[in-house]
Amino acid sequence: MKTIVYLHGFLSSPQSEKAQEALDYFSAHHPECRMVIPQLPNRPDKLREAMEALITQEKLAVGEGIAVIGSSMGGYLATWLVETCGGKGVLINPAVRPYELFQDYLGEHVNPYTQEKFELRQQDMTTIAALDTPSVRRASDYKVLLQTGDETLDYRQAEKKYQDSALTIEEGGDHRFVNFSDHLPSIAKFLLG
Image (cartoon, rainbow, N blue to C red; front, side, top):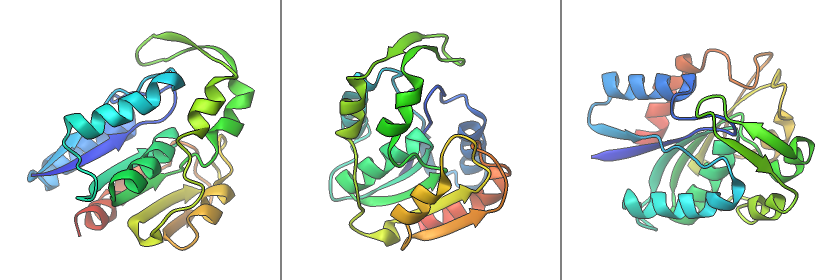
């Protein structure tokens, strides 16, 4: 049974709208697949541990390849996962250098889904940067969906990093990625093809 991993973004959860749309789609149209949507830690110092635990728990053996969908910060982590294990990744408005972006978000936060309170600290930027993959080995391993109206991230960073990948750039939209569900058939085709 093929496992599809969905990685949500910062201040999100497996209950996010996109995660649930993906789960519903794969359940209805690809029952031969199993979707795993882990609750990622809010605290950056727990991210590497969580990603390594995901590899172990889901038996995502290095070299066998994985299928992962990542949104925003989840796209950043999905890239690390594909570069670590091999496989294919679909990235939705992915963060490219979140350790720079988060400089504007230092301080206290509450995850609106889990109600967990945590602090984003300067030293967390080093932890996040340690998961960076400045370039990708095989551009063909990625399908990247971007919307120019993303109010959180500059889509041009992802456009440049993944320029040789399968890129879809839509005018307008927002960080959530408007009409995400319309792309699920092509996402499934890419991941399962």
